[in-house]
Length: 425
Image (tube, rainbow, N blue to C red; front, side, top):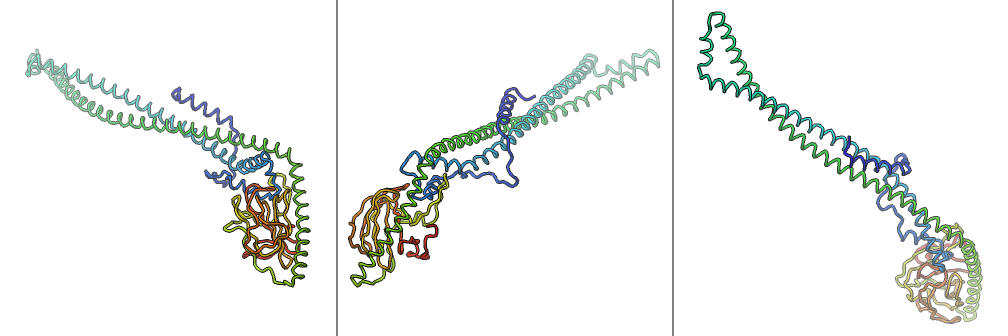
């Protein structure tokens, strides 16, 4: 039987393992790495991929979206971790049980060895007592005692009998001495074996204790993994409630965004025509040529292309390039032209439209401030405003568009990429 303390812990651990739903890893599935959780940057990136239609103006909705995406991304890894933890717990529990049995058997071997030693000691004492008796008799009768016994015979028959008795006593003495030597040697060997058994028993006990601790730890990990899944599911449900409550509002935003993009297309086309007419009247037919990067040192955070809302799956089109920049960073005109329009409000917030030659226009959105006036001429590199967070944004950046005849083109076509129309517009 296992010690009562071990049995109680093992029974408790087994009960906990039975409470957890047991599932198996798919064939060939690898255990999850410690870094399987979705990072904050990944979550923010997925939210940003929804484009300007993400309802970042509503902090509660934005937080719910991030929580929902985070929970959705972490659940598969959490479920794998749970399965791995449960499997490890079952194996650790079996190892602990085996180690406990080994320790018990080692203990039994030590006890058996002690009993055997006690028996040998008893035999040794008995033989020693016999030899002591003989020594005492010899001492009392003297060294010629055996001869006197034989010479005191009354007749030849008695002589033979006494001689046989003396021989038997001599043989008995010799046997006792031999047995004593053997018993002593046996006791020494049993002592050595007993010490080895005690050492093994101590090692087995230490192993059993270590396995028990490991079993407890793995059970705790399995419970923690299960709790994590419960937490993620609860977060997902709570976030879905908020998301569903705001679904209609977000749908309206997508509709407003598409309407604004359609309006932008018309406004850009009209501005391009007006600029072409103005340049023609002045006799200026010089082409626009290359464009200047609007933010010195600014990196691209998002390119043009289709966008799908991460929760509602509404589709939209990102018609410009997003460029990173801290709030207040100067925004510079990409080419010479005329400020055709300054607008404020809606998806793009505070924004500036500049018309250039060749039917080309550039658009700068989400500004914190504007440094030019409508109708003003600007040269390439002139500061026209500053980076901000106006409109529908998740952080400070510049939304930069390039249009030809009102049609949006990929701005990167003027900075090493292909000059192609934005396909999703």
